[in-house]
Image (cartoon, rainbow, N blue to C red; front, side, top):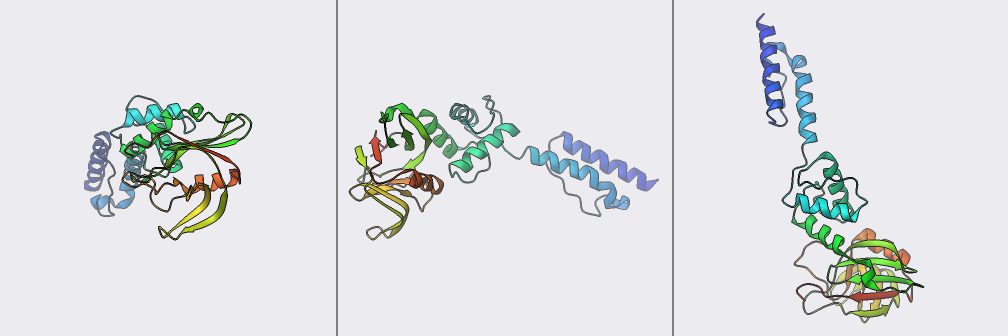
Amino acid sequence: MQQRVSVRLVTASLAAAVGGGLGAVALTPGAAGAAGPVAAATPAAVVVRQAAAASCATGKYQRQVEDAIKKIGGFGAVTVDGKQSPADCAAIKKFQKRFGIQPAAGLAGPTTWAVAQRLAATDTAACKASKSKTTVCVDLTHQTMWVMKDGAVFATPTVTRTGMKGFATPTGTFAIWQRAPKEYSEKYKVWMPYWQRFVGGIGLHQTTTYLHDTWRGSHGCVNLLPSDAQKLYGIGKIGTTVKVFGRRPGT
């Protein structure tokens, strides 16, 4: 009789914890008293599953990020209501992984909001690309890059990092005139994978630092995420047009 009472009390306590949203509860083999670990296993598993489902917290910029990701499209269904849901969490995580935002945990924080805002505000028509050739478009104002081919978007906008104050990336229409899978800068002592030079000593290439450190800037080059730099290297060739316009904030 004492064993049965102990089991009922443990089960009731666990049910109250679940209903109150207290999160995961771990029971050791001795937690159920004389009833033993078998009696405690089932309710404990239920609590863990519920905690995992609610692990993606609502971020400070939840509604703004939901709205921007919905406008950008391609990351799954999101509901613009400022409340986190499993679907919202999955879409935000996918967005974060795509654009190299760390950690990719689904939290709508300031970095995720800043990146989403820039991408959602990018106007691909502003590049005024040729309708008969491939053009790499670099928007300094929004710090984004995309590719147009024959007047249509060929590679959708992604994030970039351009020249910092005192080293502003020059604006204008240029052409790629040197390429290398991996170039080394003797001046700045840094490797530049997927190098594509388009004016002076300035080119498009993969960054070897965290792209979203806002205090950083290049010495004029157009820094890209590894996947984007590799993809662009496969698109570009000697003579490909590069159009740079706008102005990076703070330069």
